[in-house]
Image (cartoon, rainbow, N blue to C red; front, side, top):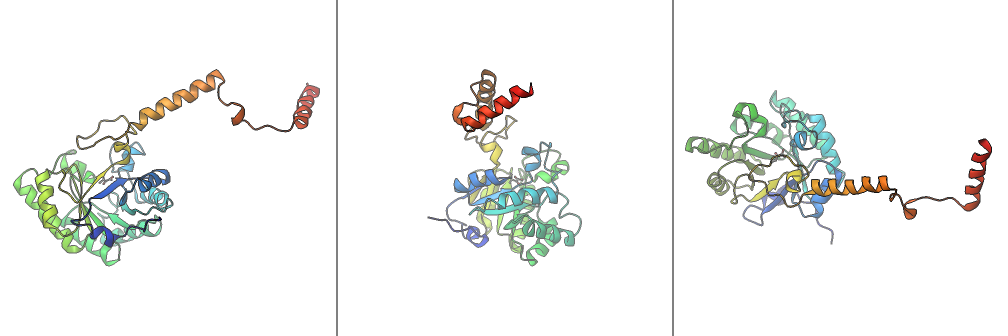
Length: 284
Ligand code: KIV
């Protein structure tokens, strides 16, 4: 049975329904894998700057880079909703620029909607993008684009005052019309309160079990690297080790002559082969 494309209203209706299954993907094969595993949402996160492009953090991601990878994900034609992250500085300079950049992620990247970080500070931008008919997923808590302002990747909202500020941000974003909200790196009780208080689904990453859904980074959950993992990551496979072992096997076969074998080799007919060998001999 072919599955129907998952839409923004369908995600909104999942509040208090089955938990949302969300994972990042950055290219066509990873999007196909995520989609066939049953993802509701594929997030083309700016984490790609780190996990795919090798930078230290997410800040080097640009709109052009995000479009390049979002388009690769969109070409997989997933049933899952495709969310493109708005990278750092793409919505911080002016409202006009923010709307133009969000529009490029939709028009050139083929995303279904965008995600951006921040609360009340970003309301003018959020409202303008929504006015342009582009749905927005919000993102509060440990927002990686604020790494320098936060002084590192630190759990947010641990104290009552900070937690209350975050709750007000969540209410303001929801009031403006975001269709869902990522909560990253916050205590579980805060995520529980926000999830209870707002009318759209919350999607947690390092936010405990009370959110309406969970998201992890593709390369973390599948063990595609051997870097340090945050404590909230659960690794369900060790593909980097599997891939290294497979390539070691391949290289050993090259050296021993076991690769390629007969069935992996093209042949010509006997007569053409004989003529070619004779031709070489005559040349010598
Ligand atoms: O960029 C990203 O991948 C994200 C998720 C980790 C939520 O924002």
